[in-house]
Amino acid sequence: MGEVGCPLINWQNKMPFDQPSDRIIAALDVDDANRAVELARMLKGQVGYLKIGLQLFTAAGPAIVRQLLSEDCRIFLDLKLHDIPNTVAGASVEAGRLGVHMITLHTLGGETMLRQARETVLETADRENWPAPQMLGVTILTSMDQSALTSIGIDHPLDQEVLRLAKSAHNAGLDGIVCSPLELNLLRQEKTSEFVFVTPGIRWAKLDKDDQSRTMHAWKALAQGADYLVVGRPIIEAPDPARAAQDLVEEIRSRQHD
Image 1: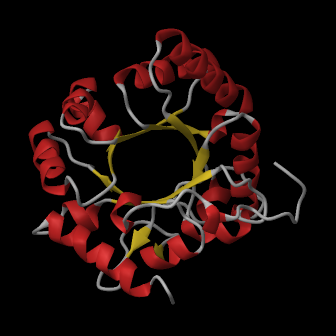
Image 2 (image 1 turned 90 degrees about the vertical axis):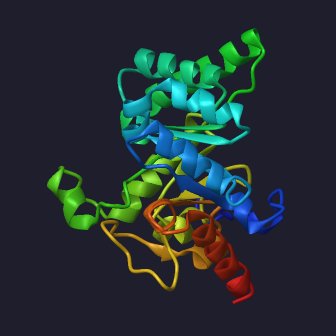
Image 3 (image 1 turned 30 degrees about the vertical axis):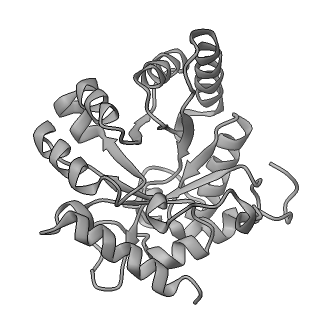
């Protein structure tokens, strides 16, 4: 991961995004395939990626992934895979075969699990000639604060645990991590320019936060070095989801030089 104190990433020099909307991942946290398709069609062209998480994947299975991919949507499959290394490697390969663009694994599964999954995906993708998805390590959920971390037996500071898990993901060869925007400053002191940062817990000025403890406004998270922002309920539960996504993009544009 490099020596302590070296720049995290020269994030200003990363490959530029054409539009702020390219950096938004809309979370389709719904329990119905028809509603997911409806939302996907509303949001096409308004966001860069659609997130399929545990709720929708459990309700609708791989079929919903295939359907949205067939409609030229980019898919972030967020299942936070965490099991024995062989099982996670197999599941990661199946996600890659579906054609998704990003998948998540939980870093608490350990470096061996992460590394085996990454290597197996790359080997299989090369042999079967399909593009390997970006593989991202989930660190500490944004719903958890220090007291929640202590309750599961992790007594050192939350930000240091995020840093430890990020290093594990990097050492295992993953493409990036999912972390709270509040840890971006710390992580920028450690990472390499190729590492991708995906941040949930995103809000904007007109809305209050909900059950996530570690949140930040979208424009500020981008300024801190986030590559992608995951936004769920503020978009999909809005009366007009497309308009909500547009409002978020406008807020980012209006604050990007602050």
